[in-house]
Length: 340
Image (cartoon, rainbow, N blue to C red; front, side, top):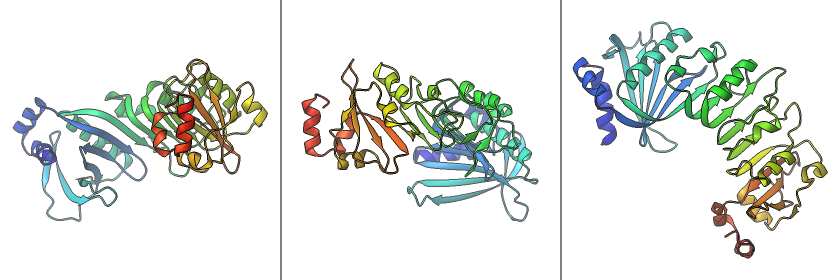
């Protein structure tokens, strides 16, 4: 019922200028405002509770009988589709606006106009962005006029890395704030030498990544694919955690190219108390040859695990959430060392 009321308000505001003015004085909350700027689609996704509204743009010339609505003073044909998502059972509404020429420039202009219209009466909790259009200069997007703070920032180009300049990469990492960063970016002859801001990192091209990138104070989880130009020094990252850095860290998983001697140098690691069954539940694709280490300041426990191919390493710090996946014998060991 709540969604029906809010959707009706959005639609009615496109038919009545008086109602639109009233709407500006009584904004309502939405959970997520998601810009999509990709080769497959340019549009906006709104999430209101369990319901999603998708805005997109295409030529509706051959479809007779579409109604007309006003968007920022311009009359446009539009078409609505309603359906239930097969994946999660949530209600979805697709709202298509007529666009006579489907160029990237025209669709971006419509995206700008739709954003302007919706923000007149929405209070937005979280912004998200997915971007992969190499035809556009990322630093010139109108989106930065509205926000530079995101819940989820996804910059990639399908199976390939999106090639960017060092300046573009610095803009993404330093000017744009994000809780979750999913990056598949290629940068020629460049390495980034600062901690990456964010809690959750998914990096699918590690060539520009350095050890410093993975030592941010807010980092919780990081997953990396591929190898960096200069091998990541996991020993330095683990010692940073042992010395009180990255206090929120839960997991780092990436390819490791060094020796075991270099990895464990100065760590005082012992054979893990966790069984193969425990480790399988904590993380897929890792063997039962893990090693445990303890932080001396608070006796916090962490596990170093190796993949079956022995090319990847996961550094996993203990969290009480893991108890539900532990065998009774392991839980007793954890009680013995006062971890639970």
